[in-house]
Length: 371
Image 1: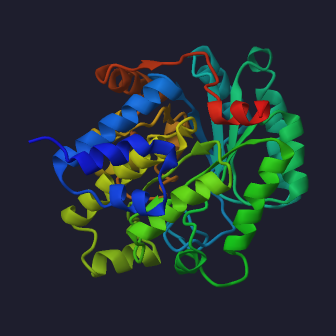
Image 2: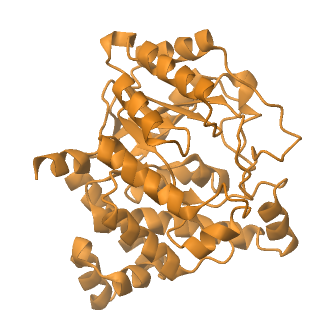
Image 3: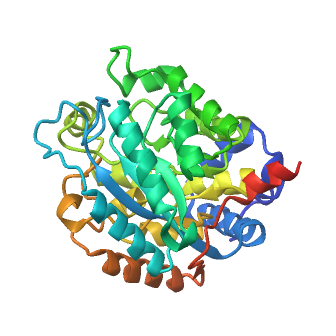
C-alpha cells in the first residue's frame, strides 16, 4: 500500500521539524508507517554518524545512594538491597580488561553520593584509569548531581563525558517521580547540565519513556529540550517497573504494566530514538539495556531505529544482581566476555560494525567546537 505523501514529506523535513511535527511522528501507530520512520532514521544515522556502533563498558561500582527516587530499585529506602562497593583493584582490573578487549571507552556509574570521600575517591580512580594505555581509554561518568568544584576536579583528572538524565523536561512531572524533601529538584538537575557544558564535558542526558502521567507532548518537549540544551549524547529508554518501589507498585496495581503496557513503552522508546535521530542528526544515541528488558531484540531494533551507542556491562558478576534499577535487567547472569560476544553478534546481525578501540565521541560536540 505504501505510506502517505504527507508522511513522506514530513520525514524529509528532518531537523526542520517543529513541535507539531514531532508529536505527529511520535503518535504513529501503523506498522508500515513506523517502519518508514525507523528506516528514515537509519539513513540519517548512516550518513551523519556512520553504521558503526561504539561500546561504553558499563562498570557499576557502587549501589550506595543518598537519593530516594520513587521509581528506582537502589533508592535509599529500599532495605532489601545489599549495598556494595567494588574494590578499587577490581575496578582497575575491569578497566584494563575493557581496554584490552578493544572497548575504547568505559562508563563509571554508581548511586549518588556528594561527600568529599566519594569525590576524592572518584578523582583518584579517574587518574588511575587514564594511565591505562597511556590515556587511550575514553571515560564517561554517571554519578549524579554534584557541585561545580567536583565536576571540575573530575574533568581535570581526565573524565571527558558526563551522563546525567533529566528524566523529563516537565518539572511538574519530575516532581511525581521524586519525594518532595528538598533533595530532588528539577532546576538543580538542569543547572548541573549547564555547569557540565560550561566546564567542557561532552554532555549526555535523557528521559524515561512511558512513565505514568506522561503525554506524547511531554516526549516531544524532551526532544526540544535536548536541542535547546545543545546536548551531545542521549541516553533514554522505556520505563521498566521495579516491583519494590512506590511507582512500580502503583503501576502494577493499576494494571498498566501488563504486556500491552510494556509493548507501548517499548515501541515509544524506538520512536523516540528514531525521531531524535531525524531531528538532532549528529548526536550520539544509546540503545539502552531497558529496551532489551522489554523485548529480546530490543537493542538491535534500537540500532536499526538510529542509535549508535551500546553499553555492555563490565560490572563484576557478584554485584550485578544488587544493581537493579528496574526488573528483568538483561545480562545479570553473564560474564563480561559473554556480554561482549553477545553484543558483537547483535551488531553484526543488522549489518553494522563495532568501533573497537575508538572513543566514538559525539560528532555534534566537535561540530560545536568548530562553529
